[in-house]
Image (cartoon, rainbow, N blue to C red; front, side):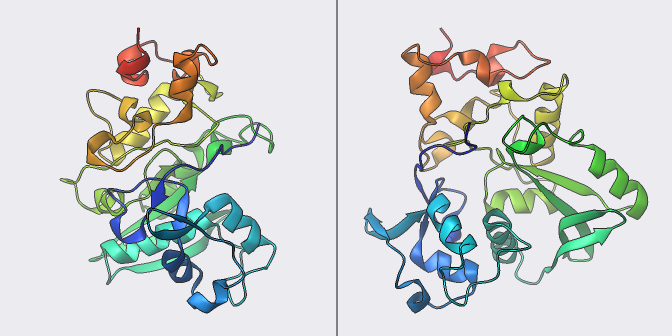
Length: 268
């Protein structure tokens, strides 16, 4: 099983709270990869809603194959990490950002300082929670967090793949009165696929740290245009409606509360 399905929706770096999707805009790509627009001349973009865009999976392949001249080397970073780094600078222009900082045997994705407050951010993809082509998860998602916090005294924020890539979530890390957002639109790894017996608590605790857990739980993560966003509905919703997929894939171990995991559209 591949981790990501067919690309859906357009993401805009400078409107990240409102736009959710897999397609990246040409101008944003140039900013992310620290290149000129002319360096993208060989990339085959498609035009959607007036924007020249490309699915992030296709972009990553070109990038990893060194087919984008002058781009940041992909060896020690990922596209998600580049997006997060850009969002940090949009949210807090005067922030200090370090990447891949070594703490003992661990390497932390980000060390961020904002107004004298420092946090570590660790991006957690689907393979941290479920069996993928990389095999089963190597450790509990909070193990690294606890070890690094005990060693440094600095809070570690787990940024799981269902937490939206947006400035609201960056601000939620540093400002207690900010609420973040969750979003799923193309992943093939769902909460019911997670291997940990306490998966429901893991998901909820990670969401709570971003202020992204409300009375409807994770339901709006899957829904179309939820919370006033331009967001695709996740394809699994239609598959469940048609009886082609089991809605149990949305319910993690450790919970049976349908109202927290199953969107109302497919609850009955």
